[in-house]
Image (cartoon, rainbow, N blue to C red; front, side, top):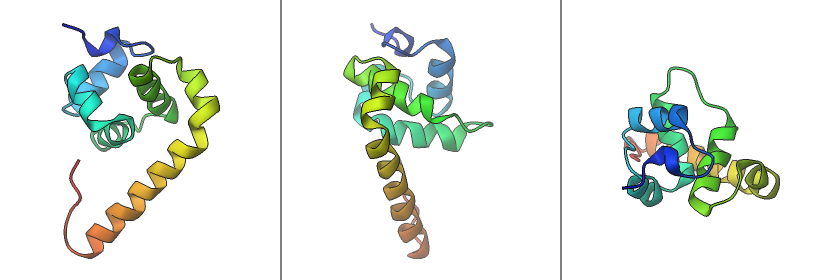
Length: 100
């Protein structure tokens, strides 16, 4: 069975952060997607991870090196994060938490 650390660009430290956030398998990571997984890790981490983790998660799912992802998809990924923050704020104002 493939472990998270076996994915390209993810190592034991990344795997540890993902598991602490409740993402314990490659299947769980694929189901959530990189952006939602990154947000969940940020919510559970004592120290907020850098955007490099987001790029590594995308790269791991796409089989690309994280630097390639950072160069090619950086703006799009940041817009996705900002969109999620706006959606989360909208739900909070309506009194309904947004769960990932």
